[in-house]
Length: 479
Image (cartoon, rainbow, N blue to C red; front, side, top):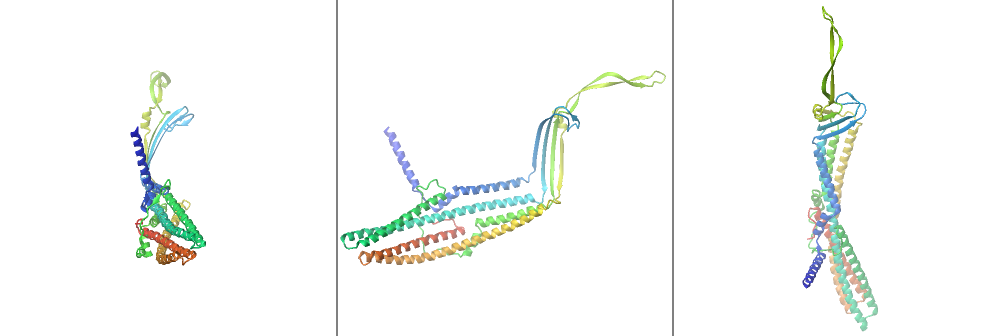
């Protein structure tokens, strides 16, 4: 019994450790992106569109094969009808069976089927690229929220540190007030500053929790409990960003970004759609063959023949003698239904033929199709230009934002350095009693704002730089 208890306790301990290990897992940006690409329901839905396009390609290829149809029937007829196999009237109940096979293949129809195959293949490639574009959008959204989480993490640390400094000053101030060396009003000012910083810390913590929740929802995690990300070492050294100008980035991106390739495939697909429409002007030639047979209960054959009594039907002259009597014997016979197997064999028939169809007048449908296909082609060309223009604008904006964020970062760093020294000097003066609490709080507030500006411009630059790297074909990474 004691051994069983030890096993249960040990198992529970192991499970507790494993649960804690799972809860403490820190997700990297790469892990977040890969998890979303594998599990996001919207992405799975996009991949179903790819599978549907692949099915269209297969079907258009199979349409080149001959078509074969067959039918069979078993029926009973009541009342007067003309039997199809005997061409005679039948008035009784007649059983019939019919079997039929037909096959046909299009030899020429203006290359419409071949152009449809090429069009569907291009549509498939476009659908794949559109799915890749959707995955890129998901990846960039994840990177945005991931960096937002990192920003709030650092902001929480900054505000917690500032609050700790203020708390130390408040504790010191209270001792001085109790000793009678400082005024009560200075303590109230410090305590008010402490309350404001505590509120700012709580606000930053709430923003951090909300951003973590948003990121976990983008990953379609069942719960955000225990979810957290790793904090990479993001260094801002030298001039790390502007090795390429916007035109170079655009030139590289235009060659591989899926939205551009998808628009190109759609335009090529429209060209084949126009060729298909023009194919309706041409005659079509088809080869067709068929085989059929059947059985009819009205088809009969003679079963038995017998000779009846002779009947006098006339006389024949007999020179020099009496006329001769002329008799005839009437045959009597019975019939039976022709056997099923014999009918199937005897009624066997085959046909083969070439069929030429020449379009003469179809209500201008062909011309309308060609006209609409030309419009669709021009529209797809405009769509391609719009995609290129949108990509160029996005890259130009991202480059300008990254450049501005980098400049702001360096300016904010200088401001931070200056306000740090100013605050350090104010802290020394406040500690020896030659600066009042209002001026001290203003110096501390300036230093806190400078730290926040550095942090904000840092992550603004990192995100825009990550986007530019992504457009240049580099994977999303903060390492």
